Image: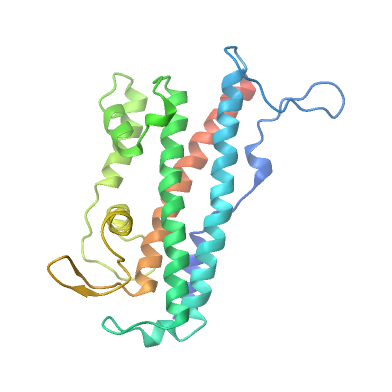
Length: 240
């Protein structure tokens, strides 16, 4: 059974194929345009390219972190020796470390997705002022019917509430909200991987394998949407 869990979790990692996302503009023999700045018809291609390179860079780092987390949880005594009320082992500490590293980078993936849609639908928002949830919430009210449908599907996913069904190797409902709440607690309150019973906070730490599953499934959803929109952009750029 544990082998099936590991296999499923690894299937949620992103299969990085750098050649698939090639925006290269060639001229002459074996020469490639590295970049263009300024206001011209080609500059937007390199804006997309910058976002795509960032996407792939983040995925490489997320894959590394979450693969290490899988290894630590399933190939050590972390899985069986977990205690909600006792300090964890060094391997448990490392497992949380790598999961939390992935959580912060996955949040950036969602912002990258919003940045791409900002360019695609010509929203003209300052890229320094885009937050993915607010961006897609506003886009879901757009007069552009295609943009509206896409944005609403994302908002529906972001707003999913856990339904209490945690069986099997299928996507759990409410992953994004749970992962986002975990990240917010890390950022603004206290360590969610420590059990705390106080007036400051009531927090019961989650078994790292359960947290890891939610994080990997949220990661999978982010990469599915990013892959789709980047391929759409590449096809439109190449066709133009």
